[in-house]
Length: 350
Ligand SMILES: [Zn+2]
Ligand SMILES: [Zn+2]
Image 1 (cartoon, rainbow, N blue to C red):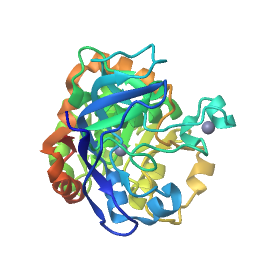
Image 2 (cartoon, rainbow, N blue to C red; image 1 turned 180 degrees about the vertical axis):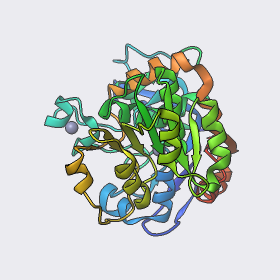
Image 3 (cartoon, rainbow, N blue to C red; image 1 turned 45 degrees about the vertical axis):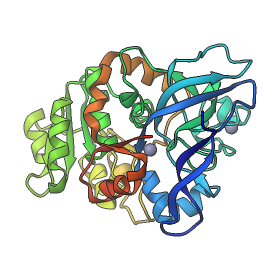
């Protein structure tokens, strides 16, 4: 068997500078290592940001380069280290890409996503857009038996969705608005369906119409900005109430403002999308109407346990988010698809 493998790597800082590289297949080196043969890996907006080398990537993430990209992956365990007890060869697994320290005050509080010494697979350590990856056992999660490897690659974005709900909890009778019809907005609709929430609306743009059709399959009521006035539509259906929970998943400044506007007094807003630059926001509505605004970053490690349970319930419904499947060589086409808005989730099959 070849000891070499191919991977998609960011080579050096700056726009682009990404390509297919040949490298040594990783080996089990530490007792807790797990060697995974990657079967499915999602291309994500963050990968596009790394490709474009956005200010957020440069200032907030400081990637180690060269580095293999890809942080949404699932595969089959090929070998395990001598101290691994919970995972065996042949298991279908996915992994939390945050290699948190486990000892800082945030990690000890179970808030690993804000650990200050937390290298991320696909950013600081070689990621999953390749044939093999080694991940420590602690970060691996065995997929439920009824979940495919492709759906398994979506455990990461679904964990982002579930974490938003951990931060801004929702009850079945709440009225929820989701702003943004990307993979996270749609994933949230799927999670709300899984949780049995009765009324949730998803607001997108004209160009999102095909994605909003998928949201309908997840039980969401779609609203197209420009065609309909979101708050009027929601109030007409909810008896003048409007949403008491709003998840902003686009990062667009207009959407962040809308989230604050349409949220009912005393309601809560979860900010999931990341604004690309600083903007002025009128915070007076937050004061006068006691609205709560909460930042939701990625996920806690424990979030993934919830994700695995939820995925067992929803089975392969997450596969409905996958619009394209491409080989490793077509990684640039996958990057294009995200930027054109023509895909929901593109999966690479290494
Ligand atoms: Zn991602
Ligand atoms: Zn830590």
